[in-house]
Image (cartoon, one colour):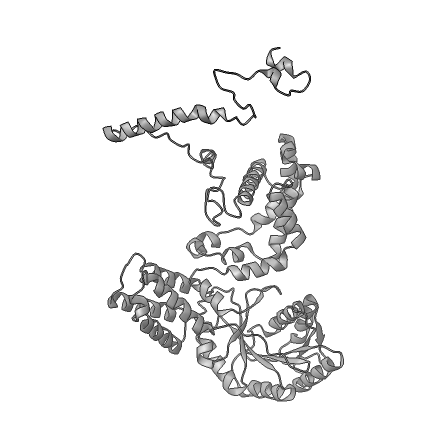
Length: 530
């Protein structure tokens, strides 16, 4: 969503690197480029003015002029101001002291309220709540059916006494839904309301009536992040007509500029609580301003990636894999297949890679990344027998041909998979021995010599041989070196006289040890030439 804004800001800030001191002209040029990037990304003008004014004021202060690295201070200021414009800090849902908690969804038609109701219900269920979805959108055709389908996929109950399609009283449905939740001990009620193609008095009145009937603890305004500057106008109209306590950004996976979504907090004062990043139920996450600001500045979002991995990965399997990587067992293709299947639970591989720091510089490669390649690798491994997965060395030419036919691939692709697997296994063993870092970097994560660079790269893992010091060309220094060598040579016999690593005390070159004086096992004399 924020790819163009991220690229523009990264390019602007990278131009400051290497400068030991920033002049007023440098600061003004940087602020001007930031202003242009924000306006091109559809950020509202009031938000742009507030943002650039804060950056200019802080950039001209002592915290930058007295810093050892002024460019890094500018990046820090921009990052902190982005967090501020996005809301400052994440806020939890306001839960009622006496259940059920009522959450009302409002927004225009097409913003994704019904789908978001299912995602929110699924998320609440994961948090240990018992949610109930209430179908109060009786205006849009098949809106009730859609909510029932989404609720079924999420495993969440749906209250739908009316079939909708223009028939029924949405206020009465919302009121009866809350009463039903109280009777059946549901602790959270999510009320899906109707929208329109544009802001009108009828929609606002209906939303206000539902609000007055159920007294919601949270009113979430669902904002389509792809509608441009109209997002600010619509948000302001709902804030004045109905009021809302939080914002949910939908369609953040789109390719629109999306900067208007950054303006909602500044224009309405309501924080962004959630973000919808795809069509699947799992594509729903808490909105963290600091993490989103890091994504925009191409700093990555490792915390969100870790949280998603903790949900998808099995702890016992992860511990078993760690032991195998450390050398307690053999990492097989079956283990590799299980890891791939768990990675698929995280969602698209492209989405995960985008959360890593610095991946904005590889945006073109990410766009060309083929998700079907993961499925092809899975098919190749599944076409192998259990014995072949446990011991890939038995896969000869005829077996490779059979695996290729079974997976719909070629023998060369099978060869490439097996070669990459062996390289990956070697790298993981080296990482485990180095304490988590990549090979050759002494445990420093994220860098180092990675195997797999071709035949010429083999052998680069070994440390370079130590070179013997040559004699100095300075006569005085050379004489000093010769005296030190003579002293070390004189001390060597004295050190040997005290014993050796094999316990033969008193043995020297001139006086060898008598084997008869040693406590040797019976029959060992034949190895001594006796």
